[in-house]
Image (tube, rainbow, N blue to C red):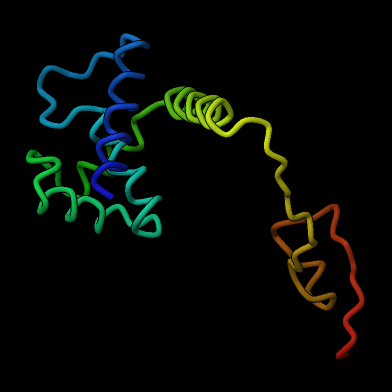
Length: 136
């Protein structure tokens, strides 16, 4: 876990350096650290940023931790282009390391709503697949 956290931080920091990303001079926590908290939360804590913040602060990985609301504002202030660049970098890295391994995507249909409530469905107003429900 320690190696993964350090690797995530190094990748984020190197990416931001390569993109010449500048943080505000008054910021107590860098954008690489904010990205690291979010990615560690996704990897180890089921997406819970608060648990990830507390863990990284208590174990000394990030000594200057923002409060929950400050972290949330900084996390949402990061542009989507940074995340896209990071995920593209990670995808290319894993492709180079693993080679051309086949993968499988599950395309099994997921029920959205019952046939009786289909007209009130907010997810798919125009196109909703009416399936057969054997129990009714």
